[in-house]
Length: 198
Length: 198
Image: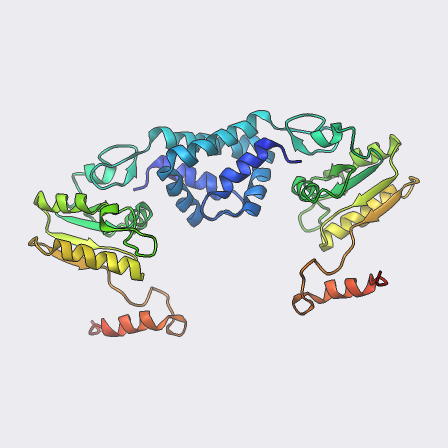
């Protein structure tokens, strides 16, 4: 007997990654009870995102301006580009505030399983940026998954013709990681990449 | 470097029960990429809920009309009221399509821990409905938790003065439940309430 409006909202919310039908229903109810201090702010935030966000034509980041704030920032190192699978990876890296160059978002990863081929990714634009010159280093920051690493290898190969440094994120123990709980793959990588103690 | 709009939306989504900060961020990104077929429908669904839903003055159900569709339905049994903790419980019971009477939503449960006292719940209105007459049976459909059962006992006591039947949901094995996986409390209840085989 839940009204049509509630069912429609529950289905719209249930489509969000991370929310199933049950939690969507609970979320609807939670919102209905908090009209002023949760429902309205959520609507306003969604409308702001819809009306103001654009994709950066240079790096495919999502921002209120095009080129995005990062690409437009003259203080950032123009000589290095960090290549990531998704915008969320860009955000995660940028939150760490360590990389000072600019980014390039592929919009996914090569995947035989999901039928994602090189031409489905934002690779041509990356090659174009490198061909335009002025780039010293490309940091491949793909996820440490099979598909992420396949994508990294593919891009590294395509970039071979350019006289630039191609690097990738180090693999090893995550900070706070306990040996006992780590998978063998990570341990093998960490051992293989071991470094002299400073 | 995620824009202010994105951060605001991520915080608004992260407040929803069932979504943490990480999944909220992922949901934002997912929405940004699906402007037409997910972001717009979600906004429309939220606006519809905000603009059209009201709380039923009789039973506290949430619906597009007041009194709600259930309270206003003359085909429903006017003599029995099923008391539930929350609107979501009402929906769950009503989806089962077994109870043909009307409902009463308490808006929570008694909880010493959370400082919820009888006057914080919608109990006076329930007593009022019963005092108005015409009620034969009150079904107490609280959750089978300590607090739910405390609430049920409290309400049963308050209803003692009225010449009506007060019942509660049966406790026992859930359908499909395997003895081996059930807690001892449920098993004890199921054994205590055992019935002759038909």
